[in-house]
Length: 111
Image 1 (tube, one colour):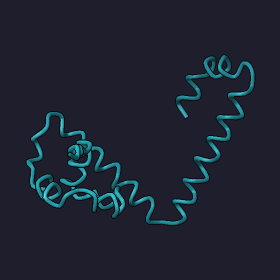
Image 2 (cartoon, one colour):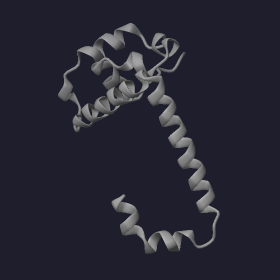
Image 3 (cartoon, helix red, strand yellow):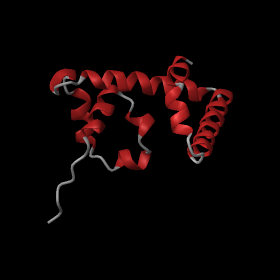
């Protein structure tokens, strides 16, 4: 007998908000029974406690989608994160950097 497969509650929220197709691949979506997708889409927004957080997640995903619409902005963000990761690796290998950063943290945080 095959064991029933459960899915993360986030999948239900993504379905309800209509952004599941932006997040999951077509193969992943096809593995979910259509009856589940329909049921989740029609569930009440406030069925789950603290469901408000899903609106915040939805807003963040929409922002990411807008950013990724421009290939220039996408390349710029990728370069920025690559640069900051490299910078972090370099400074973390220098002895005494944490002490210097802590000493000047108010200046760094205000930037």
